[in-house]
Amino acid sequence: MRMSPRGAMVLLLIAIGFVMPVAAAEMKPGAHAVASAHPLATEAGLEVLAAGGNAFDAAVAVSSTLAVVEPTGSGLGGGGFWLLHRASDGFETFVDGRETAPAAAHERMYQDASGTAIAKRSRDGALAAAIPGEPAALEHLAKRYGRLGLARALQPAIRAARDGFACDVKLAEAFAAQWGRLDAEARRVFAVDGRAPRAGEAIVQPDLARTLERIAADGAPGFYEGPTGAALVAGSVAGGGVWTLDDLRHYRVVERRPTVSWFHGLRIVSAPPPSAGGITLGTTLGQLEALGWKPDQGARSKHLLIEALRRAYRDRAAYLGDPDFVRIPTTALLSTSYARTLAAGIDPNRATPSASLPPADPSPQGPQTTHFSVLDAEGNRVAGTLSVNLPFGAGAMAPGTGVLLNDEMDDFAASTTASNAYGLIGSVPNRVQPNKRPLSSMSPTFVEGPRGLLVLGTPGGSRIITMVLIGLLAWDSGADALGVVSQPRFHHQYLPDVVMFEPGAIDPEEQKQLADMGHVLKPLKDTYGNLHAVSWDPAHGKVEAASDPRGVGAARVVPVR
Ligand code: DON
Image 1 (cartoon, rainbow, N blue to C red):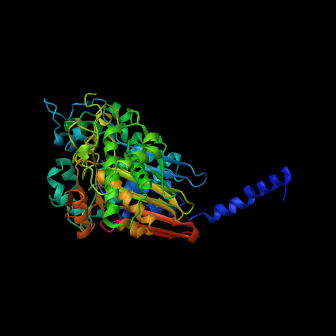
Image 2: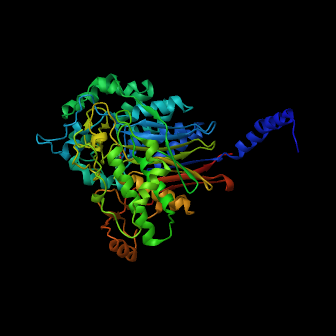
């Protein structure tokens, strides 16, 4: 049938004016879903959603509540990444609230006179702390994307800090393990009867409540300036740090374009530099695609995955850093041709010793953190991964603020030979420079494909990327949200040249086969990670949320009429 241009136009208008809204209406999840590392944070997200907020308001409520109830993992003194998707127009963006090095930072600040890195200096105490990004990011999220305003979204966090909350088992374990690392102010704030809090005991943080109230009243300047800003600088300097009021005043959130990679028809939207997540995921998946990888071939599947990771993590060390300071060949690293080249170097029967790959430093001269996933009934979504780096960050608290300082400076390469707390090596692109963001592994991720949508992420330092990878591969193989967060985990990161794995993650026969291929296996005594996922299957109208059984988190789906 031939159609006149006018007829075609009428059809087009019908399509735009009638079919699209119906289709769009059908494409709404019709339920709110929140999964986070703590039940109170999940409830905080649902509370602001019930009050008419959207997923972005919920992200502010969840993030700020986690800052209160999970001080091991994230906080106002830290930073994070928030990956957003807006349903009304499909806009997606990456809100980079990563900490920045203070202006007085320099390449040798964590080295002794002979140039050897001194790990303690970049991990414990105020010198380890970079300028926090979370308060600025919370304001940015609320102002630019939220509906309810910052003050409303911060209410659950303020209540939890002011009225207190019950210490959970994991937090009690962390206090017991880290009590000796915390400074006098942090111990004063958290102590119950002069000792570390135990499970079930109330933790009340009036100073932190006041700091949150200042942010609620004045926005980010309530943190970076005025009495809180002054107290933060005083705390830093008293603890041997180098922060200035100018450092705080100059902190800026940056919006970046997320990385997009493809695997088996899945579209994977993830964290761009200064995270290594999106590129490392993309390079790994590109190699698997080139190899025709299948998940169900026992030791062979694991071998190929390990080899792909080895090469992707080598590139992490060689090329990645803060994109505002170094040129990163993102397009080339994510290209099919590059993935094919890397994959061609993989021996299907033998491990390639990492030492035999070109060194990661082409120019030598030159379990904590937290994640949450939110989907609202309209289809807006947020994957947020936030951190203060090691448990309780630097262990130092600026007196009077309730704010624990991060030790994110350890994510820089302190020297060209040193590895950081996660055993990661780095090179020139990730050296310490003033006002620079340390390279991160945090990887808030969306996966879109024939089964719908998956929102996921986890803490776990360098292992974050392999956990997200294993989770999305499981989803591709048919796992539901609970299956995704529960997957047994193994990991390889180029150097150290070992395959680490959770108890039971690699069966004894596969272990033997992998060892015969030349892999060095390192069984771990404990499980790791704390992955939180939300999924939506529009074809079946199904929304799911799941929290990692390894943690104490909570996931809930609330249908909305
Ligand atoms: O940004 C990073 O990669 C690290 N600071 C994250 C630390 C972390 O996940 C610790 N968790 N167990």
